[in-house]
Amino acid sequence: MSRVVKCGLIQATNACATTEPLAKIRDANVAKHVTMIEQAAAQGVRILCMQEIFTGPYFCAEQSTRWYDHTEQIPDGPTTKLMQELARKHQMVIVVPLYEEDGAGVYYNTAAVIDADGTYLGKYRKNHIPHVAPGFWEKFYFRPGNLGYPVFDTAYAKVGVYICYDRHFPEGARALGLGGAELVLNPSATVAGLSEYLWKLEQPAHAVANAYFVGAINRVGTEAPWNIGEFYGQSYFVDPRGQFLAQASRDKDELVVADLDFDKIREVRNTWQFYRDRRPETYGALTAP
Image (cartoon, rainbow, N blue to C red):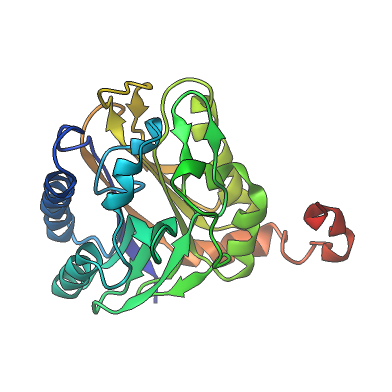
């Protein structure tokens, strides 16, 4: 029996002025995404992911303690609870990127994973945290992840998560493959300029090296008052051969949908025996300081 699963990615502009109260910003962005989740459900999407910290703007463009109050707990916070209801309603696996509070002053860049029956399966915390001028001051906001590289056995596929800057590090991408991931989702916030040429290079390479599907999500638009650059969208799915299956536009809110045939993973791995031919006993230098 073929394992073809319809999957979706949501890219969107920030829904509310960044000067508004934080609760209003969260509510506006969540409401916008709920509408798009309903659209995904109408198209039969079974696995869905939003962009990095989808509940607000990319606030790491500045260093302000104001945004610490944009955190919420996982899984007990309101957004995770709402997404559990939507997952149950639509029999949809939903990956929910949020700014997580794990205690007073302890904050992570996190994605919650919710199964198709609404069950909270767990979370991934972004491991690689950039601090790069201009406008990517993430170490001000996030502790490095401490949960490793979990793979979640959902109703439709084994799903891993890698968040934005993580994508520059092949080691975690490999760890997800070794953990059994069939689909790796990378919610991001990245602007035109230095790294744009890598957007369509690194993640297809991860897909090929590990023979799994990748879904890459980027937000769109510019965000005042920081205006650090254009979030250039172009969210996409690639298959285990690195071939593009579907891609969004550069400059508008969009739902990207593709049918992923998970049987292709076995076909590709039987051709390219990268897992058989690994030499882990020679890789000690990779974990040296």
